[in-house]
Length: 273
Length: 73
Image (cartoon, rainbow over all chains, first blue to last red; front, side, top):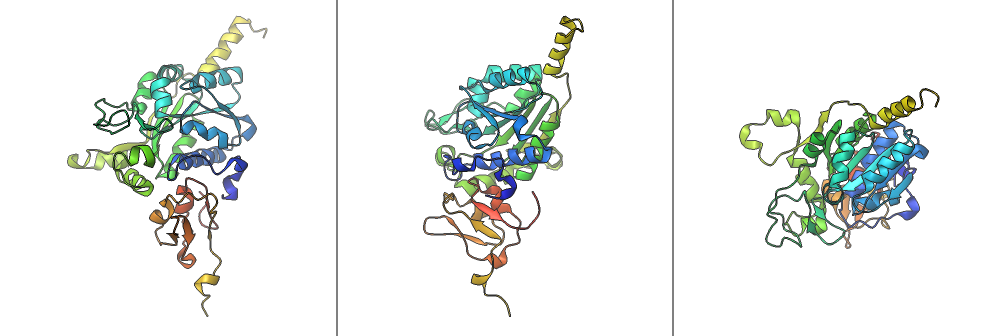
């Protein structure tokens, strides 16, 4: 491991349990690089996760970490942030954890615009439990629960976050690590609910069943389909199909929840607090 | 006199205990410094070709690769 990043890991817990070629490790690296660039105090930074492959990440990260119940990472993180607003709180979640089991927590945390940095590792599948389709599995995806192909339409979690009221929404991928680090850094700088979808890849349960090739092929696929909004706008109409727009998708500062709550405390105590 | 490739200090080092042999590094390496061994784990075959671009290190999901020099990420 490069000494530049070693301080942010519990090195004695490595190697991690993720499958060969799982890109979760790449995304975690982008998170710690963004934390490093932002200059956050490690002792004032909390990483909260729910359940799932991605949610194993805090176990390897050298911060104050909290591994909670399925879908409830945002609820626990909201509690941490409200009790100690001076902490930098990150939530690491997956597509199932955030948009299915924790869907309600997700929209309401976004609506409140509480200052959390949420990184959703989107691998389009429930990996830990054996490859069931998730709310972000594209229509037609083959999964252990959809052997003839998934007939459901998938969530666009970024649009969901924006509609629910998140003040910062961005999407990156595991191939373009520099962009991913950059958009996480911008999310840290946003005082409010920052939502970052990181396209991850599951070569074992999603890749094999859907004939996506090996781990490197899945990263190269991300390289080929992901474009920034500016590049997308320049593309001729016939080349736009299947492209995924990455980069900062929405940034509109709004009143932040813990700051507003502090004003209520001040008001209720009549300035005597 | 040029230093023989096998004696050249490699900018790239691979921690084989952490490498799971996923093949991402040697598929992405632009100059083919790394190759897969019989377990498909990464080994440094051509250190003299390394440009320290750090693509392998950045994309190693297992943090098994360290590249000395090159741009700070």
